[in-house]
Image 1: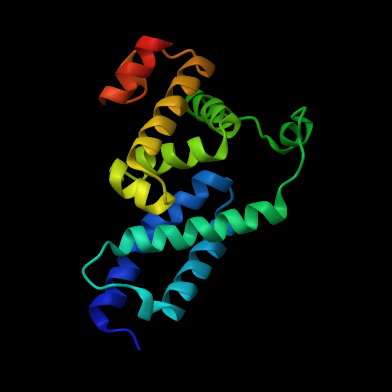
Image 2: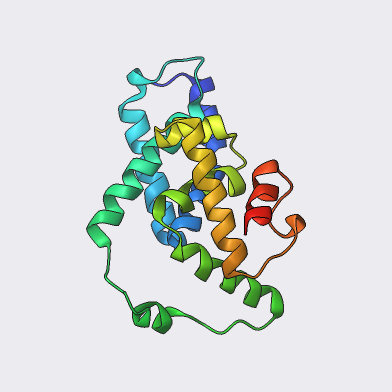
Length: 177
């Protein structure tokens, strides 16, 4: 049995939980399935959660593990990009074109870099929280985010920090690129 306050915290975390797999998969139905599976697993393992610790990090860790398990099962070889090219639609406006270019560039990043960038950049987690979710050292997350931003700045031909974000890692990525 889950107490009301913990249940309310879990429900409040669902929108952020949902945004993460949407960014990783690009598919809202898969994202919803992953979030549902995450909540079911969390409720089934609620006795393992230590009250007073970071519930969001615990839930994101469960979600991340579920995603990676599913990803390994569904991974499709697409070395030349022909499969991905068939899945694309042509957007109507410039913002959608920019977003399409960003998503395509994001998809080329190694999974560990993409995940770190999404946790820190899209989810707004601190490097410490992202490290906890990913079960790696804080420096590893910083490194992955830096490499991801550097690669994206090259792929998207970005030249100023305002185009990527204001933190010191972004400045360093642009300076080195």
